[in-house]
Length: 497
Image 1 (cartoon, rainbow, N blue to C red):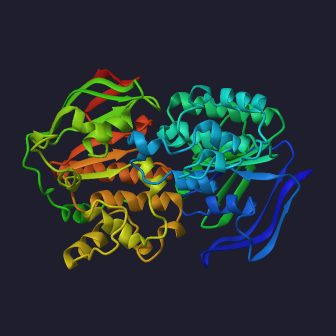
Image 2 (cartoon, helix red, strand yellow):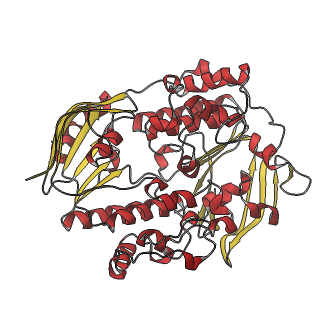
Image 3 (cartoon, rainbow, N blue to C red):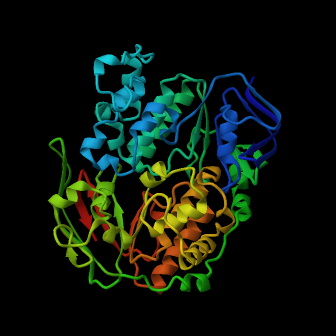
């Protein structure tokens, strides 16, 4: 029996044609992976299956309930209003206004700003304690249930979002790149949880890269430019996988364009930063404990560690986003990190930064052009700032370097998540800062684009004295120019090489 069936489906999103004449069906007992390049229509297909987008023509038939697992906080009004800005997880007072993970999972959340707790009557939760405990255990969330949800790491947040969908007990679960940003442990937990759900009778459909297809998957759908290229059993698709590699465009790095970036400005320092015995504490618990790290100008480092090990917190000290930086001893660009050193904005002006958290909170209604331009002002939008002709030229330059110039007039929300990540990478590069802090920069990028970006970073570093801090849970994503590494575990330095 088929559970889902699409017949000659055409879909437009924001008046842009995305899916073209899609015919495909999912039968009982099948588990599907969807693959394809950036902009192939994978995420739009999931939205169509979930009923969030209606086809302009054609027919979608569903014989089971369908749930698209959330990728951000927009799934709930209270959750969305509680997650106010991307540095919030580091601000203990602001973080406390957010509901706990338990409240999110049981949907018993009071509106943000509630003064009289007794004035808000919450309906009984539809989630039983037994189900909550089972799902929390399945996804290793039990120890986090009473934490404010905005304090979770990227990997922990993704597991919480999955848990909200599992507790709804739908028959078909849709996932959009569920493994990106997860460490080895979290990927293992998630794959085992999915396999357990598939074994219990749920149907799993997930968008992923070819290298991340779980063992329980039975079939693969390949999309290209909004059309079905193939829909095959996994074993048969694997025999065809080499053709998938040849179909993907592999653009070459334009060294002439990169040379136009030039040497970074504000590079007059010997050490990018010196951190001495950094300690960050929340409610008596040390998130970072006795972390010391020195990075000289022009060095290229990887920063690694499991989800929740303190990587983002450590980077937030460097990027001036953490209030506890004032309680710690460090130098940045040769000056004290507190007292008569650089201001927060002086520090940010010399750092190009991209992170999963920035992507999660970035305002979706801004244009791509303004999103890139906001990098000049270290804000998430240009608003009333005027972009001058030289800055406009730089915006077009980095857009050409990352091959996204055709997106400049589009709205950020109207492009794919992979394209959004490229826009944020362009934003990090646009002012040509002396330090690049790239935290999981390739999340949501297909393999060809990931390799192109890796080569681009290598070429930039070969031509200039940029200092690089690169975070990734995938060793193959790390540029070859990286020759130093620091790893964290439980908030402490595990190894420096």
